Each structure stands twice: as C-alpha cells, then as structure tokens.
Length: 147
Image 1: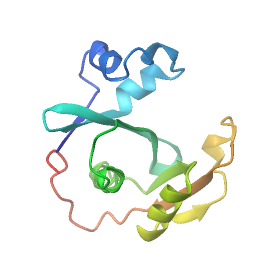
Image 2 (image 1 turned 120 degrees about the vertical axis):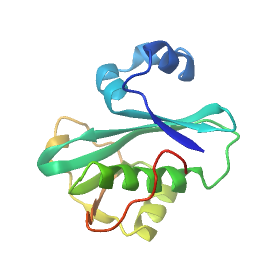
Image 3 (image 1 turned 135 degrees about the vertical axis):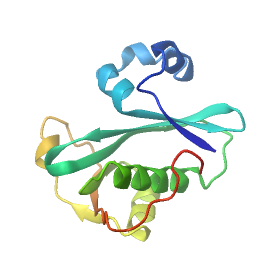
Image 4 (image 1 turned 90 degrees about the vertical axis):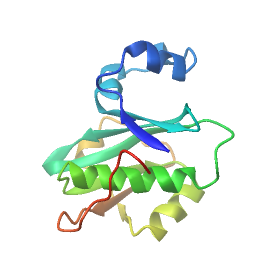
C-alpha cells in the first residue's frame, strides 16, 4: 500500500478517481493541494486530505474509500495521517466523524472528543463529532510512502 500526495498530480487523476464527482466539490483546489491517494494492489482505492488549520494543526478530511478493500483500510489511513502529520511537524490532528464506528476507532486510537474548533465555524455540523489528537513530534516516524 502506497500513499501519494496529489499536489503534483494532474487534476485528471483525481477526476478519474472520483468518477465524475470531482466537479461537484466546492474546495477542489484545497483537496488537490492537500490530498493523498492510497494505492492498493496497483489501483487508487482511497483518498484523504490533510488540510492545515490553526496553530500548526491539520484536519484529516474528505476521507473516501472505495469498495472491495480490506476492513483495516480506515485504520491504516488514520495511522498514515498521523505519520504524515508528524512529518509536517503538526501540533494536532483533527477529525470530524459522522459514523459511530469511526468514533469508536478514533477513541481507541486515543483521539479526544473536541468541541467544534474555531476554524470550522463556517461548516455546518450535521450530526457529527469532532475529535483531536495532540501530536508528539519527539517520537520517530515510520516511512509514510510505503505502508
């Protein structure tokens, strides 16, 4: 499994991955600049973005996983995002969850429940929960390009 930044990719790669939905996204420029595609068995099977927010924090957003991947994929992507956040010297990593299964996973990974952060005030909260993890940048990171 390889995680690749979309920053230097042609937009056509993202358009193909999202199968026609790319043009409906409001923040395409941000997703392109901050996004990552996950290659599994020679095909891109997942996308996520790590967007910079306030005070050195990053927001793991726009997590999209195609069908037919191992059930461990969400865990692997969250662990990859933690590693990437460490490499970016992030102070914290935020996640907005709409699913109880993801809430449980974030809790197990030691994310803490968070009131709606100030950077997200323009985002309408629709039945979800904010989570945050403080990033310890003193810990060694593993190679994030091959997971």
